[in-house]
Length: 284
Image 1 (cartoon, one colour):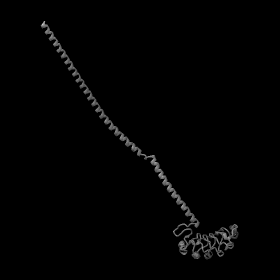
Image 2 (spheres, rainbow, N blue to C red):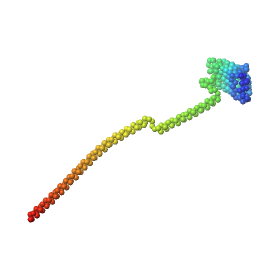
Image 3 (cartoon, rainbow, N blue to C red):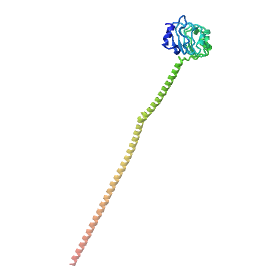
Image 4 (tube, rainbow, N blue to C red):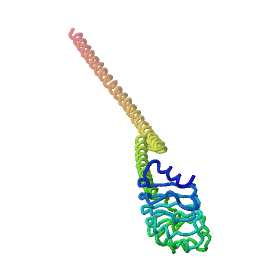
């Protein structure tokens, strides 16, 4: 498809003044130049013309609001000074896969004061010794070359992606905080469960062993006390029996004495009666 027809298709019944993004990849340029792209695209911020066999930027219109320009896989070998004039606010420029060989060709980009990222991957210039150091020294305004900064940190694809990364980073941080809080809550629950469940295993066994030892000590003490009580009880009973026997002996002795006294009294009365009888016989 020719460049002009592709542009008309991409408009989709919109006026050029309303378009902010335009992708014309894989179209064919006529004589290596841009056709159909003009100054009417005043609000254009993103333009991609990858693999369109573009060899010159001479007919590039003035695009003052253009910030990102994709020109990879073309046959551009020079004429980059046009960019500073037609697209002064560029922040991203992709020239990978073109015919750029010398540092002098790239030197024209010094006038792009807002340029932050430049891609020259697969260009012959990358074969130069100290290529990266030379480009960073020549274009001191850029931060990223071929997707990496001077400290080999990878560049974000776009500012929108930066915002997206920040958003997802914030979301991830919230998830981490929620997870940490949840884990703390789980630990508290586990502590509560342990409290409800009682002491850990082994502790109960030690307690039981201590209780058994205490019971054994009490049994031993009780048995010793019982033996002592038994001895005391036997001694007491034996003493009572001895006392009862002594009491019985006393009772028997007292009874015998009374009987003897009674017998003596009877004997005395008998003697008295015998004497009286004898006296009566004498009187007769």
